[in-house]
Length: 354
Image 1 (cartoon, one colour):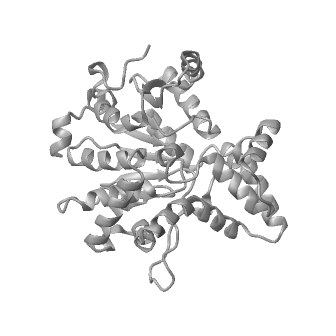
Image 2 (cartoon, rainbow, N blue to C red):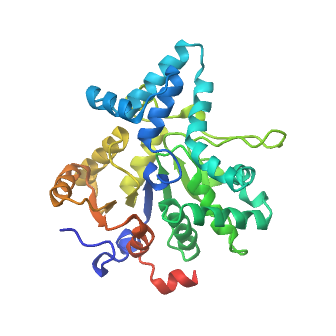
């Protein structure tokens, strides 16, 4: 049985012998805030075909066909374009779905406009509005992994134990926004993270890059606001066709970026089901290369909630062996912050004073 992520035997393991570490994130980190991958697929399919699809009907479709969710997003796109839609307007519909639940809750608290501004630059908000947003997130999503991670990451940078990079497969910028809000709560904190949607620009130097390997979507500001939107909607990896294109391109920047950090750093995987075909392919390649060529031991740790059945836990352990991944079980998703804090070697006292 692998050790607990809270045990002394793995304290600081992600920074073993002062090595760098990286954080690889999936959609599970915002599961209470934003639609799941499955729910995003169901809703965009409704939009694409113009027909209401119940949860039961969608589950039945997925079960009978055996198709992954990217195939259903592709189906939605095909239907959308057959009816005169464009790739650009389809990306807009995806964006609406990604942020709709969060925006509705914010609107109910009269904070939607502040939320939209925060997605672009929380620093432009008045302090009282930033405080109101932080209180909104803490009240509405107290168990959110994204909220836990944002608090921790802002502190880790302050004590010199931050990650070399964050690699995310999600389309949203919720984590980056929450990190910036956490930084701004400390008047002396500098901006330590930067969102990256393509090959790293020069201005990332000195910052922790947050790479959106599958592209990203940022909601627009309210009408009349003079600020341009710059995101990665032109390079979204969502429909099946985009997965196929990336798989066939040996030197696509998301692939080379992931493989670089998989080889050069220890890695914590959070919020993943490990069902994404790109992630599994890249992990397998990295494990093969490390086994054959790398003299330095790397730890790739998947933090996952422990299944209720011991048999399922055993199967999952076998399922990732060829990926070079070590599973560490959480008893609750509330443990993410404390588990990761231990794995990077930050004591409770250091955390409180950071």
